[in-house]
Image 1 (cartoon, rainbow, N blue to C red):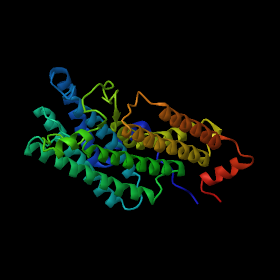
Image 2 (tube, rainbow, N blue to C red; image 1 turned 90 degrees about the vertical axis):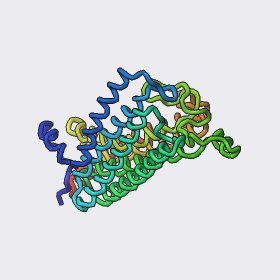
Image 3 (cartoon, rainbow, N blue to C red; image 1 turned 180 degrees about the vertical axis):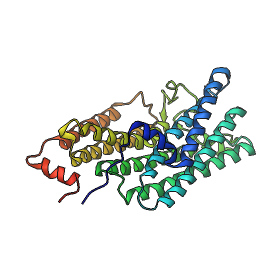
Image 4 (cartoon, rainbow, N blue to C red; image 1 turned 135 degrees about the vertical axis):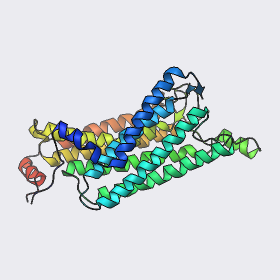
Length: 335
């Protein structure tokens, strides 16, 4: 029995067919590129800041992240064999929601106001609540796409499982954002005392948003920051897919990686490590600890994760006596 493999068109053909993978998602990615260009111009000519950061930095980051994710999702939907129409509608819904979110972020940046956690005025609250609804809808649509990808193969087993594991990690990473909507201890005290509730929620744990942060990403250098786990999770999908495609390419030159069963084991190990990294960064942030200032417990957990990953890769890549032929047969679908 022949097993379908991941399509490998020539680079020119690959680029020519890209717009047809999923037109709404690809169109949204193109619009994100326009927003990114506009935000970069804003960074150059507009010196306004908000919570200590250039006001156009958030639209730029979101535009880039959404564009990358949309292109990945469009490619995956193009590989579906069954329920393609369902996948198309779910992808269209996802693209509409993230485009609406990006529009709201851009609008608030133009107004000089916070886009997230902002209840300062009825208009700001309406914008943020609309964004929250769009994010939940986008997450639900992505979950539906994940189910479609879970119940069918999109190439070799290693590629299929890279997509499945990566989608699960991405969904978990998106869900990490829900922790950011919970009022901080300081906000709860203010609300209980009848104080203003202009801002409810934060991405920083332990201090108010807007303190010292890493360049570009802005992750806090003095306290926990849930955006780290959010980033690690969302882009786990791209990391796993790129790994699977890289392993396929390397398998043509390195016999050890030629059997799909070997590549599958590598994907399983790296996917498990990436999921554990997501949990580790979320745990670190919730303890109010900066990603660049880990304590001894966090360092020990990271060392154990690194050791387990190294051992797993040794297990995945080690030669098995008489197993290469069986693995090659399994990779090509022969009994």
